[in-house]
Image (cartoon, rainbow over all chains, first blue to last red; front, side):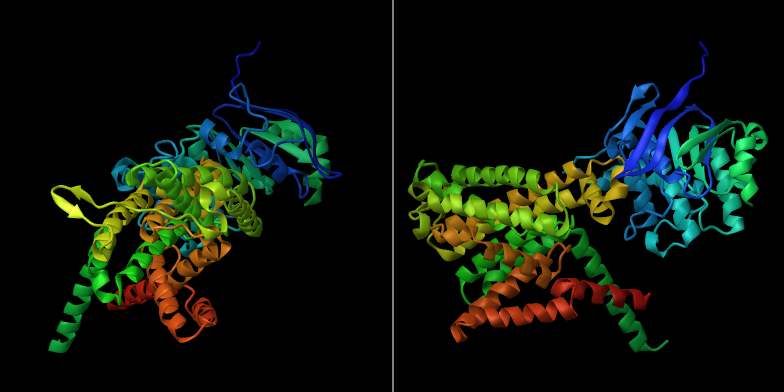
Length: 249
Length: 334
């Protein structure tokens, strides 16, 4: 037996919407404390895969295990409590709350969920943690602004700060650089590499070039099915991948 | 710099300080107002009505304004609070304080059951389910004539005079009645204010803003909604219990969907999602009703027209628009 620790194991997962099969019997394992990526051309099933492993959809069949524990079909909030956090592809923040409150309330989940009579201002450390996280993602000094007033790239950074606030063991990111300028993309990729040094990170990415240089493991999906898995070098050398993916561009 | 500039700056400074103080001590500010409120009203019964319906609207607003769930069935909680307080006193011979507690508890229980069933649905379906369940409550109480008096309502609720800390309180004196009821309303407002300022208050905001994100943050959205629903029912139940003491009877319309609709109107008139707005809405609604019924039997048409004007031109409501005005002014002053 190998002593590799897996943070997330996906076993024969299928996802059907009516008669449409979005994912067909996909099996994959993700090692702990590594930066992995799910890639594939448009319509490969990446987003469905993301939604299944992040708890938005329960798979039609198959099992999910997180740190060895079966979490198939668990409610969305259970995923976050267990330590699986996500940033959405389409920015999904609390628009009318301040950037600071967005992160603060995300961090509050570990401390307090149903306390009715305590003043929330009393949880001082959460405010400090929110400030620290905002600084970490490059939003220092913008905490008082409503999230809706932030630029697109800043909202994406805010998403990441919110996802980190619950101290996840596994961070899932759906196309974290979608719609970003080249400069913003570079900053975000640097941040992702930094984050992956401390925890397991899985990113779903459409642009293969972006992840080739930084990821340790890649999983390639095609038409909802598993196509290949391996290091960036393995993937580059894989004839199937070259045919369906690299050959296109 | 001219002296007029100086004085206007001094004025905005004063306004800013006043607004800050009111925001920070909102319960104290509301209380201060409610203490002198009876002096401003033509007669005490109207002031007491506004007090009670103000609390009803505040309880409703917790769910509607702060959590974003539009219930069309909140008369059920007002009515259950009223009836159970009355039943406790008339049929069970409980002292009024205990009967009031019974009424509030049963309203909370009704909130738990109705909320549990309703939060599985969203949007218009949520509103319809609450309406349907509240109608079931209406007919159950209507039919249970032996306990509720059916169509005639439950009669014979008398709060005897009592002594507290050396003072004699006579419930037949309208001024005394106002201040006794105000004590309960004040406690409830303090409670609501605490909840809104609590960590749970932050979760409520998150759920209203974005359910999907709140769930991704690890908050159990259904449970959060259910808890707010029950809190809202408890507050509305207290309003109902106080109304039973105030009226000495529980009319069957206490459970009627018209009252559920009035809660919505009061919230929108005053300003949903603001602390004091529902109170203002209740005051405007009931005063308008009071004045208009003496002039015409078609008072509903007048109230309806006023309501339409507000929804179309002042969607933030009377109090909400005022708050916005003040904020804008302070912002311009820099």
